Amino acid sequence: RVELVESGGGSVQIGGSLSLSCAASGEVTDLVTMGWFRRTSGDEREGVAGMDIDGKTAYGDFVKGRFTIIREPGAGDKSNQIMYLDMNSLKPEDTGTYYCVSDMLPLLGARARLLDTAFHYWGPGTQVTVSS
Image (tube, rainbow, N blue to C red):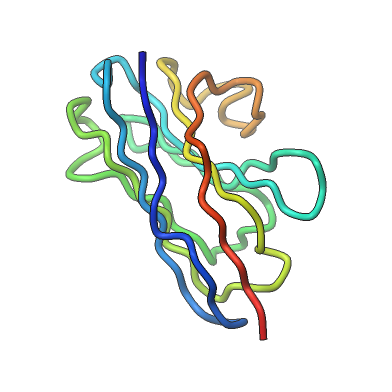
């Protein structure tokens, strides 16, 4: 069993920055891929970013270089299961609930396309609000 807990959400002005954190506990040595999803004004969960232990990354099209996913201390170390999402140039449409996700399989196929059904473990989410 794996538990994911997000932190770092809050309110920020348009154009501002925010950094989210995710800490994994439990059977973390089996986790290969970690990532972020969000639910904004719509009902669907949207893939934000993903990264596996080999350092391979994937980002949602809307990110456009504004967000960076980070795993510390190094992508090849399975014992390290802390992940960050650095978000810059935030827009009102980035407002929503952000979820940390993880899976025991690499960032390939459906996980590389950031499909929500491809990730097994989900955190409860943290709220991000971007306003003027």
